[in-house]
Image (cartoon, rainbow, N blue to C red):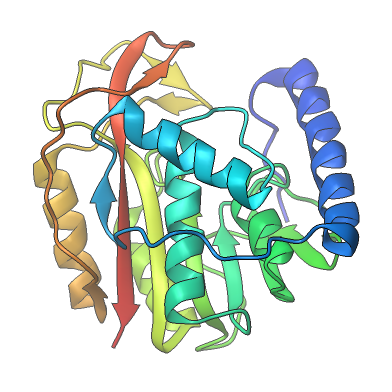
Length: 261
């Protein structure tokens, strides 16, 4: 097993560990005294973040539900959409893998707060297995796992595939480990007219913003592997409501949900 180096260096890794500790301490305490009393308001399973107002509304909904906010506020939009889709279509008995997970990101803590118990995150950065409030984080490659066929009711993959993930192997593996009728929810960086990223890198790879053509190709490959898109693929957006300060670009997010045939 070769563990990937943590992106961002030692200082960033330390900050992430602090954030992770604070997050899971809150989840553990909140489950005992103030778990969410209602589910998220319905959100389209497949959608584009079109305006700043939309991610602000998602952050407000997280506050209403007492969900710990992601520090990068627009990311609350795609995480909330993924969680809402899983709760609406499968419920609190779902088994979920967060592929390419981070221990400080939102999907698994939020699902834990809603009462889900069979939750796993995998990532090439992880070494020894770690549990946080019953959630298992383990080493794993999202394009080739060791999980049995049909192991999960849902797989999420949030803001990961743009970082050089081989797309067809990822979709093939997701289809293998999701049961029939289960869900795949993916979010990624997107723009209807992507900005030039020729000289921009992050996390050891060139920055990539998906175009409409690439998204349509991704959906077509998913369908080839028995993953059918849920909802409508409308690719236009009025604003570029996401700003990545480190590389100085504006763009948006897209969230895609699929059901396994």
